[in-house]
Image (tube, rainbow, N blue to C red; front, side, top):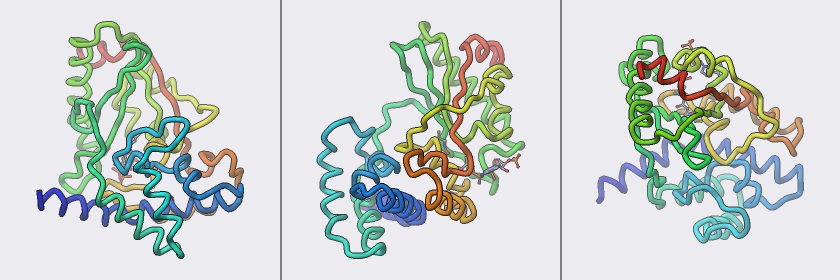
Length: 253
Ligand SMILES: CC(C)(COP(=O)(O)OP(=O)(O)OC[C@H]1O[C@@H](n2cnc3c(N)ncnc32)[C@H](O)[C@@H]1OP(=O)(O)O)[C@@H](O)C(=O)NCCC(=O)NCCS
């Protein structure tokens, strides 16, 4: 138990810089739109999910969020707000994830199981290389092969694969997928900012904030359209979609 608490505290410290950028981003928007900070944080950062509270449901915020917001209102400075955010994260349980993991990949079923949505998170920083390095392409493809074999065996009704992430800007990511899926990338009209699909680009493979990306983001949000905050990110989260048959063909289904 002590080990888990210690690990969570270390993770909170590692994420301090990430939380700081998210707080500054939301504060700028709150100031520019005259909206309360807590409401803006809920909408344009992934703190709700990071605190293990899941996706925020429309309507009244969750109890856990209300506690965070109340503490935030008592803070008198940016440093206090950041310290409180780190503290709330450290005391929170890990994000609940019912999803099966296949290395860096997991999936979620949508539209009554007809759609498979791909998720990526870094679980491989070994050899001092990022998970998308050329030397690790075979590993990533094995994970995808495994995942789509599982999908075929358990979700025969799935017809379409979808994704939505800044990662689709990167050839290093697109090359892992069927050509028609990789070529399908499109810019959605609106992008939600309460997950990792845009925020993920702030982090390097060690989990540290990329200073140049953070600077550009914060400069952009100070000047750009505060009503379309996703446009402030250097790389836009892109959508991708293709028939699942392309995946089964490529990965040997
Ligand atoms: C994905 C992740 C591991 C990339 O970290 P990284 O330190 O940039 O990793 P790498 O150095 O291996 O970069 C991978 C490739 O992307 C490119 N890249 C990364 N960030 C980039 C950026 N902002 N602009 C342009 N290219 C970029 C790199 O140049 C490299 O390409 P190359 O192999 O052709 O040189 C890291 O951002 C992360 O863990 N993010 C959180 C998870 C996430 O975003 N998930 C998506 C959820 S939808």
